[in-house]
Image 1: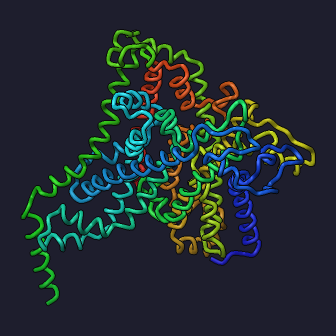
Image 2: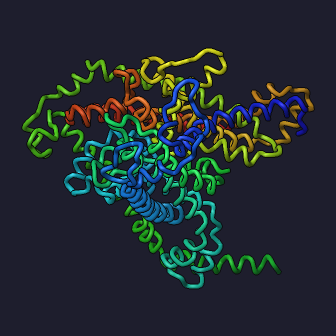
Image 3: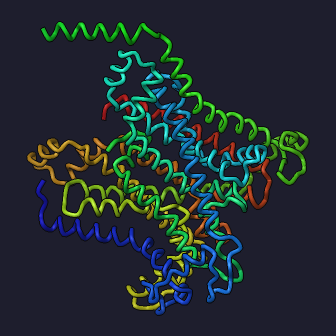
Length: 286
Length: 318
C-alpha cells in the first residue's frame, strides 16, 4: 500500500525516538566500560557522555590486574565466574536439548508422552522462587550446591519446555516422505531418527540450542541461590563488585556487563527468524 | 496409467510401514520421551511432597535436624494462618499486581504501535528491526545494572532532564519509595516492549492484504480498518502475547533486585523478592514452603481456568 509523505516522516521520527530510548542505556554501559575511574561518578555538569580518556583498565582490572587509582585488588578475578557461566549454560543446554529433542520426536511421530506439552508449560508458569526450597535441599543432599554441574542440571530442567516445544514444532513441520522412504528401504525407526531426521534438522537444532543457551546464560536468581563462592556466575559475581571501601566499581561492573551482554545479543540476532516461535512455545511462526 | 501406479505404490507403502512392526514405534516413542518424563517428575512430584511436608513445620536449615525429621517441629498449620495475617506478604502481592497492571499494558500498547509502523516495507526496516529487538536479549541482571547507573542522582537520566528543563535536576530516583517503583517499571518496559513488538508484528504480517484493500475501497479509514479487520484477526496472538508477559512479569526479580534490592525499605518488594529475602535472610524455610505452595495452588487454578478459556476461544474461529 502506498503511504503518504507525512506518514513516512512520522514513521521515521517515531522509529528514531524508539531507537534512542533503546540505545541510550546500552551505550551508557559501553561508554562506562571504557572510562577511567576519574570519569565514573562525575555529577551534574561534569557528567561525561563519552569517555574523554578511553582506557581498557576496567577490563584488565576484572581479570586481576591491580589498578593504581583504585588501591584495591580483587580476591577472585572474573575468569572463574565466566567459566562457571559458560559451563553451566552449555551443559544446561545439552541436557535440555537432548531430553527435549528426543521427547519432541517421540510425541510428534509416535504420539508418546501426551502429558508432556501441558506439564512443561506448567513448569514454565511457576516462578522459580516457589520451587527453590526443595531444590536447594535436594541439591545439598546430592552435593550439587555451589557446583557448575548442579547449575547445569537445574538449567536443563528449567529450559526443557522451550527445547521441547521448539523441536516439536520443527518436527511437526518437517515433511515425512523421506523418513517413510527410509522405512520402506528397511531402516529401523531409531536409525531413521538418528541417521536421517537429526542430520536433516541440523539448522533448526542449532537455532533451538542457541535460544536455550541464551535463556540459561541470562539466569540470575537460580545462580544466586545455588552458588555461594566457588562457582558463582557472572551476574552474581558482578553484584559482588562493590564494597564499603570502594563503593560501586562502576567501570569494572560495566566492563563485565558488556562481556556478559555481547554473546546473547549476537546469538539472538543470528536466530531472529525463530525468536517468535521459541518465545510463544511454537504457537506462532514467523 | 498414472492413477494406477499411484494406487499401487500407496498399497506398497501401507504394507511395508504399518503392519511390519506394530509396536516398534510405540516402544521407541516411550524410550525417547522417558528422559523428559523423568526430569519433569524429578522437579515436580518429589519437591512438591517435600514442600508440603516442610510447610507444616517450623523447620529451617539452621534447626540442626535433617529435613526428613521436620515432623519434630510440627506446628499445626501455623504457617498458613501466619500467611493470612502477613501484611508484608499481602503488600508484596499487591505491589506485584501494580507492576503488572502498569508494565504489561504499557508494553502491549508501545509494542503494538511499533508493530503497526513496521507492517509494510520501507528503507532501513531490517536494521531498525534488529536494533529495536536488542533489549530483550540483554541479560536481565545486566539490564538491571544499566538502569541502576542511569537512575543515579548524578546519572544520565537526571542529566537529560536538566538539559530539557534548563535547571540542575538531582532526583534520587532509587532512594525515593515512589520513584524507585517507577524506575523499576521503566526498566521492565524498556526490556520487554521488544518482545510484544516481535510477537505482535508476526501477527500483523499475517493479516490478509486483500481484505484491507477491499475495506479501503469501501471507504474505511485506517482506524476503522484496524478495529474491524486487524484486531479480530489478531485476537489469539494478542492473548498469547499478553499471557506470556503476565506470567513472566509476575516472576519479576532480576532487574528489580539489582536496581533496588527491594528497597528503599520494602518499597519495591515484589513477591519473588519477598520470598527470596525470607529464604536467605530470615531462613525460615517452613514458612517459605507454605508461601510457595499457596502461590503454586493459586497459579494452578488460574492456569487451568485460562487454558479452558483459550481452548474455548480456539473452538470458535475468530
